[in-house]
Length: 132
Image (cartoon, rainbow, N blue to C red; front, side, top):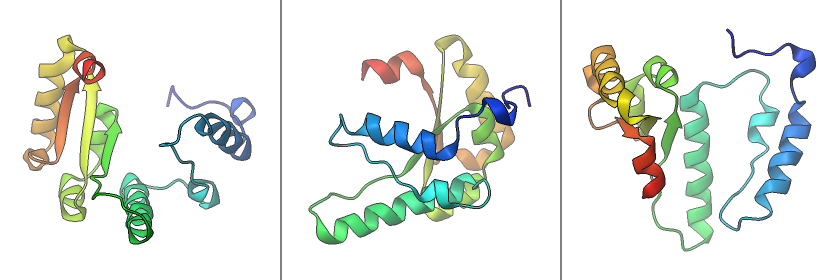
């Protein structure tokens, strides 16, 4: 994969965690969870989404937090590799963003990959996302 880096160029996990924790200090609405750091292997997206949902469920028991929709924002290739049926069964949704000129092509790619993405997977034009 052209996006993979040699191990010597990768920031160690504990250092990435510290960077994320320091950055999150500036935002009351951002939290950093060590959970991903404690996994022995790479996690599939559905497992990560389930973990996020579980965190929110626990928080809602002790705080006045409205129900939350867990939505995966991802690259088109990651969305295509995910299972729309599993996402739907678990109550998750996915959004991939793109430039306006790629919107129709990406929407077609998702619907051709699986008609099951209807109501679960969405393509959003990135400028529209930023302006709203």
